[in-house]
Image 1 (cartoon, rainbow, N blue to C red):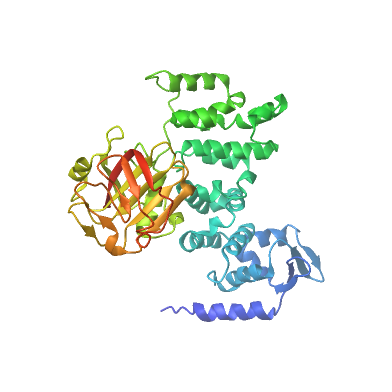
Image 2: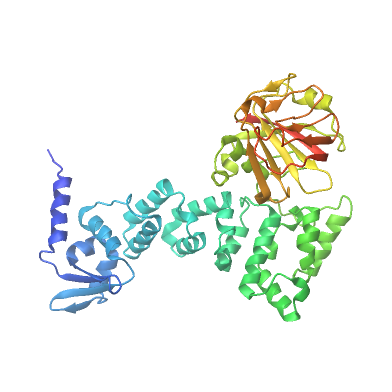
Length: 463
């Protein structure tokens, strides 16, 4: 019969640690003026850490008056004390530490070659500290990349960045990212980002490295040569054939002097000559969101979903989209027809509609969580109107949730998606009477009178 008294054993070793009785090691930890002296035991340290075994057996440590002396200025006394508790007692408590302190602890544990603790801390960060990467994505990525033993944490961080690239690419320190890391990210098929945005971020990074302004008209030959050399390794990683025609002309072709001339020729041929196939077989990056639209792009969907669920948009990525958006109706060559609208959209449940205002970049739209059948006002507290000053730029969005639920949605046989003071007549000429209906929706800048150039309605289906 065997008995286990691990708790008592752990407590006894904790007393040895705290008392320092019989110590033969002195370690000075921290930087001045915050240096702490620890009295420890070489036999325990050597058996629990390969680092200390090597330090004491190979003469790394100074020996004076029969005691080993080490200095560790690169770790704080607080974190070193946590490591000692694990070495002596087998106990580790991470819940009270800040996210970045846990990463610092992981680095120190890796230096001391305590592999069980390396694995445990990575698991803890992955399971309980999923937001830690937001604090300093560039610095954290580079730190993890430098440690081969952080493989699990590295894979986790890459997955997070690929799902939500703006964490890194929109951060203030993005331009400080090292070239090998940027190259590694741009190789990923699952980087969830429009190709034109990837190109623009790459240019921003390149200009920052060379301290050159983004003004091709003012570049001299030396500027062009420097950027060309820096861009060379990244050009094959940009999937130029998957950039829209307009974006290519205004955001790629204007930089033709820094791109390979054969590439420019091939891209021009692809965009100009009808039915011309790409000269490259590079597939587009994986986009989980399929959207049949001529007005909006897949990047709009996470924002719409955040409005529907009434959550912060930063919560959403392509794998957290819990709705399908199925096209029900599209105006025919800009001509809106109320009968066709109701024939396609009545009795279909929740819908979201989007309209492009003629002769402008503005998009407007709304969400009806009910349906469009009937001929009367419908009551809901979950509808909203929205507007994009520029439909291509997500940050120009304005959102107005309903304030008066009794006038949230009007279902009229001769009207389209009328909501509050928005009158969608049986034509492409619509009106918005915010003055009279100011108590129904918040003002989001919808014009008083306007013509609709394109119009689409999507059925919103919970997955």
